[in-house]
Image (tube, rainbow, N blue to C red; front, side):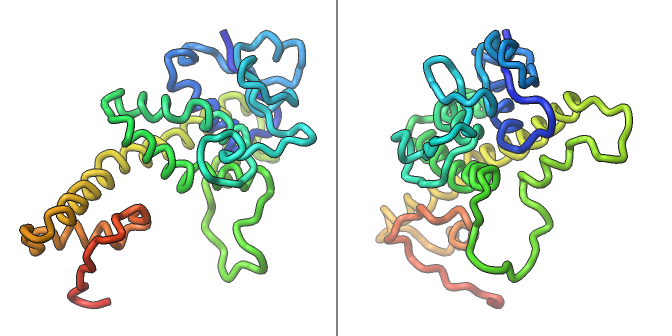
Length: 244
């Protein structure tokens, strides 16, 4: 039983795709084969980021073939129009199951749907865009970021001046790195963001009776959080105190 991906220089998208598959009971015991040998890839149970085929039924998830333009919208998953990489393809088809596994299966379907959306928007979409060469903005950047996830995952590749390095071991390090980042994001949503969201929503629903003072701490944090975009539109404004 095996998961196939390409050999040579690895990238964030297939590293993340492999991590997601390894979280699922269906693939958790599969070994990873990194090769470009078509005959060897044919023996794999699932193949990502190589092979020139996208076919869910045969579990082939490549995005490099001519004419490939799939997005989360075109697959009927979410309303995002960024061309998918192998990360997005695997997330589209297995992402909800992966989130369930990370959270131990104890999560309501409505939460899964919301997390699935937010994790694509705030984590996966950038991996898709970068791998497909899609710029985040037009023009010259005003400053340089210290490094996105894709760049940091790529740093696990053997360097030109290193000797006796096993590229497959380095690939597994990249898989673990990107996986740890994803798990941290999933658990943040479940353990921090979601509880705060529930508190605020209940306060809004009962705004005629609730005392706002005890809510100031969580409300201020929630409203200032980059993850507050889906907050109820009727949420009251919280006055900032102690500076801007």
